[in-house]
Length: 220
Length: 288
Image (tube, rainbow over all chains, first blue to last red; front, side, top):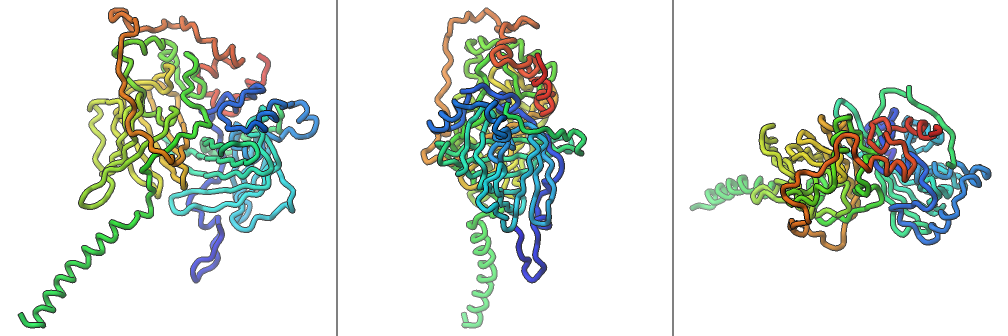
């Protein structure tokens, strides 16, 4: 969070970053492969603590209707986008906002370390994200609200506009001078989840954007 | 003893005593750069757990050819062999199994520092002790055990543990192998009631690249046992002289089961490394 140095000029989130998250990162899909790399069949909701109301909605999932209604990005919202196999490009939007672009679904997220500009009540797929560094040796915590209702999984497992997403971003070394980005995602949704839905997703650092491959949202 | 001599003695005593008091106060206060890990942690099983429902399902494992061949030779009937029934699984199972963790520390009785952290056993996983006192890893030729040898350091408030000297075993319970050269680096991230483990497995014998796994746990209001129930082996109808159940190359009868059931390409089911990256989705979208 941007702040004031004691007796010095104001510090920015960028200047006080304890870790460098910027660059290109590629998803390494070692977990939930069958729910992420392919669209699971209707009714396959393994390990999501859904309410009965959520199950009824998922059972009515109709990807053709979503496409026709222009809702093909439902599974690319902030609660799910980190699970979508693809690449991240993380940059500084300005001194107090970190930007995360995805090639899968071509989504953009802004993590604000100072005041979050509100959308005047209009929810969006990526919502409004408030970020803070967790201190020396720690990484980033991001809390996202005001999201448009979407899907946790591509086969219609819903989250509501009341959902709140808390994410933790950590970077660790890999053998051979590599780096792994661990994103732990906690989705709280009083409407569609019986308990928080917690997943952790891995990305490997890439040297450049040569494999960046923007693709549009798809409902299937 | 005159008053000035008494005061001089008191001054010396104070000079000697104050640093001790300060040292005591320092050791009693929290070590801010570290996190408390002790306690009972319930598993959050909202991601893949075990993945051993099918005899041939290596999805998500970057196996090399040798690892794949070895995996396909495995028969789960090996678990009926008396000498293998209580063999248990390697420590990777921490982030693959469905169970919670019981973690405690052993403390230096004089200095108060943590000598080691221990994660209690399950019925089919040995306890893991993480030595924090700087002792070196054993010689490469030293005995390999089910627990292996683990040393730990703090990186800020993240505990980083490195495990070596494990016995050969399995990276997945359905026979995907791990060698006795495999190592495991585990990072423990604590945020309030949430504990997330990030595990990187290196295996020069059976993996084409390091495997990365993670799993989260939440503080448990009820105690989790530091030991599993005892494993007691027994006769399961398999004669002792019948040999080790296995499949010869290209004879595993289950090789197509998952591919057929979920309409997936065989290379994904067999753990080819390229299937773990996003660009592989384009091949999935292509007509098959």
